Length: 224
Image 1 (spheres, rainbow, N blue to C red):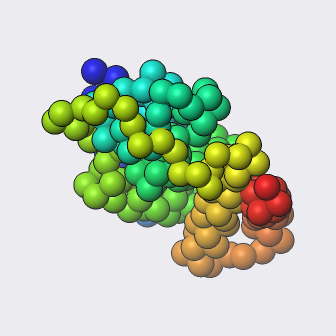
Image 2: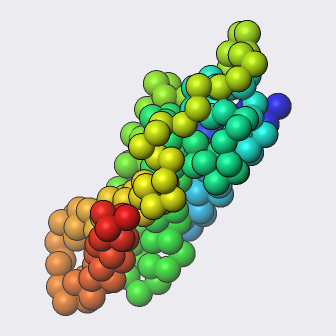
């Protein structure tokens, strides 16, 4: 049941990202504050959905639910708790879910803390961020499902990738993704500036903290 809740939450996040893209985009074109607000709320909803989904995946690894293919392929009951938790992003499917969690998280931050931006610039940036979310979430849902079931669950799993069985390397992917994905906000703001035809000093002041935050997280990830 937990796996199905996690899978449903990913699909819900995909739907909300589509709403985010369309509502914010149309809101910018029509200068409609109501549609822009719907897009921002959808961005926050997509992130919260993925918090539920990723939490479900971590739970499945912690309890060693080998009826889920991802868990059976990347965990083992004899592993310490920290490595069972790390197994949630130790596979391609899990890492894609973590990537989507970070992507929608940054989109939610942009929607919530973008009050200093002009209405048009913010709506355009939130819409572009939504497009990125749709692309990666669609791939996760249709080609990299982390909650796929096993018809006949094994008694034991295959264990975690040995490269990740180190505390520093275990924390390496989350920081690396926080850095890589953080630059998506810079990309969205840059595209929004091109759409609005303004890349002035105010826009530069908004881009700088996002860039520094992403660069710092990337630096920590590489150092680990």
